[in-house]
Length: 417
Image (cartoon, rainbow, N blue to C red; front, side, top):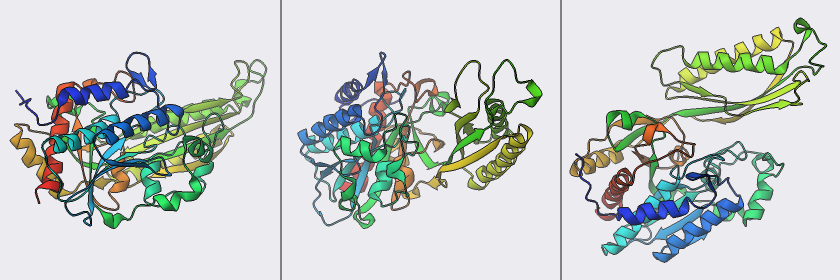
């Protein structure tokens, strides 16, 4: 039986999570807060109010990041940064990302209630557009503040034709002032992120929290296959250049490649597909679909990619199709800092917890932060391993334990030095 006594206020924490979940609510438990949308803006302002109420120095930068700072005894020292994101998938749950932000605020509120001023500053970031679902390119806010945006990112369109530049301006940001919002990495000592697991491992092991060892490297591609439209009733089957049939074969092959080694951590997903001209009685001329390929072993992922591209070419030739490939994201696996993990192990033992140590398949804002500072992550158990779904759920008891471990880790790293 796990000890449930915590320093943090579990009831307040859960209430704040549920209230935030009402913004962009879909159905009874889901949320849709796409990056830079009116719902996202409402959520940012709502969370900013939480930060203001506990006396943090707050701002929204020109990338759309929400920042809250608690001063330390030594304000010239590099800050400990904690947080996550509050944007969501279009068909998402209320815990993904939001737990890391609301949990971080609860940590600082608990420090205040205990009369503890940290030795060094502690800064909360609610990073903009971690998900990447609206403009097909995630981790925007964290990459922006680190000066790592790619050429043409502001001209990416959403499904309604709005560019990211237009969406940012509508949100209240000024892309011409991005330089004012850049962060000097030397001002950050480490980054901590609390997140739901989004997978089934902790539940299978019967443990409420886990310690993350690192993040798998995601590869995102957008593939467009083009054939020739024709009447569905008059073009003989052997003479067709059906882009959808070709795309379907490619998608099946990708799924097979990811399962060639039983038990391997390789995963692949095609989560978006558009067919043109999208008519019942016209042979599909063009199909655009996304590829998400991940593995904790970068060389293994890249090897699968090469085989996949060979199969794509073979299938395109077989059906007389042409194709184009756009690379949206390519990241290497990034491993957590051993010293931070050891602090988490020690504090978990004090809490009578035995957290499993596990790799993260999904990427997080921590992935980009890892390039400029040490980082650590804590996972909270997800019921049935479900995420990116309105059924996403973590119990108030598990959440309180995860935030308590975050609190104890923050105390060790920023207050007890």
